[in-house]
Image 1: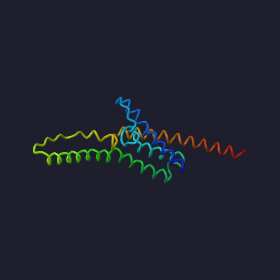
Image 2: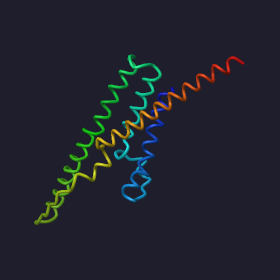
Image 3: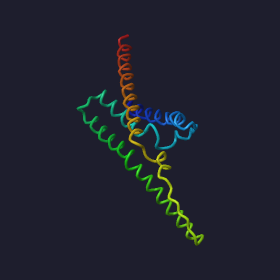
Image 4: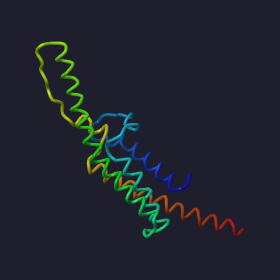
Length: 163
């Protein structure tokens, strides 16, 4: 794999790992399983694509086709993470409510139906805009650090070749 892939995967891992202490600070609840779940702050989707886009921009330049592809792909991923996936979560909750209602109808005559709040699926499926922004900022930082470390590697490899 190339360095861009390593940096993007590192950024995704960092974002997933940061979800645990951020959740703890907000809710005073320790939940290590958040590392393996989607949704929450920061968005690992945004962190991954923005770190790769930043790394490409700094390594290859903004006017390259590599940067253009990464930027457009990244914007689509971030839009999807905060829009479509979040709406899908809310729709899924409504469908689950209908399934519960049908079960109740089949088992007794009197049916008391209570609509559930769509906020339950927010953490599981999609992102709020600030979570996407947080992931993007983490990704830009990771991509920049990856680029700076890559520059250092290149300088050292040239230095070693002289001896």
